[in-house]
Length: 275
Image 1 (cartoon, one colour):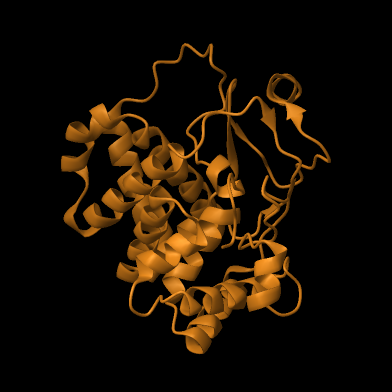
Image 2 (cartoon, rainbow, N blue to C red):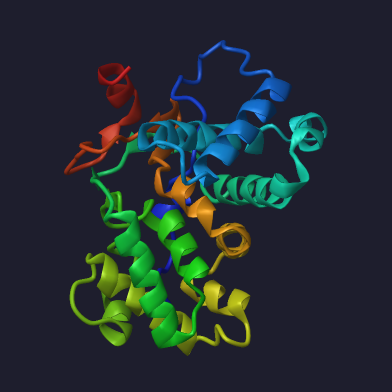
């Protein structure tokens, strides 16, 4: 198996705000949030959207889904405002957020990671396609795993179980299924394709994903994101821009590119120095 207990993915969840537990902000109006989300979903799928606008839309999209995921009481207000063309993607994204947010409780420290820029989007898409051709594992699943495990390689850090790299392999598993560098995007993506294929992906994708991470919530979240990409590959442009947020006892904190820590930092201390 790839990991034995807690993982990086279990701790990484998208969030709407980095305000602490004492924040008194009542939050956004769900109807307004829904309408803004629809506009941002359309923007990230439109190839004519300029890059700065796409990045901003993707960040709002990510934040909105986290906020909606933790407010199921809003579903009856928001769902009717989502147009039919986006309804399935909306349902999958909300469900994925709810699955992942339940995997671990908030932590009282921020992790010893480095947050770095991901490999270029076109480069990653090429690696997913290459792995699909070699292993038969759909590129959408490989992209979804890469998103969930490390935000496409933004997270450079080991899990508590010792899993490493952008696809979060234990070194022993990577030695069996990979070649090259466990932290290199191409090498780790190709290894993930081999691993999933060897564990029966062709006949049972869910079963293969369960070998990858022994969590039903993980399997469901990865499948949700893969389904969105299969229905509309243009959704990748939004996912690619999603940031790293970390759930702590003082609130959900963004870890921007450039964050680096060699040992855990008390979450309250980090929040005080990064308000």
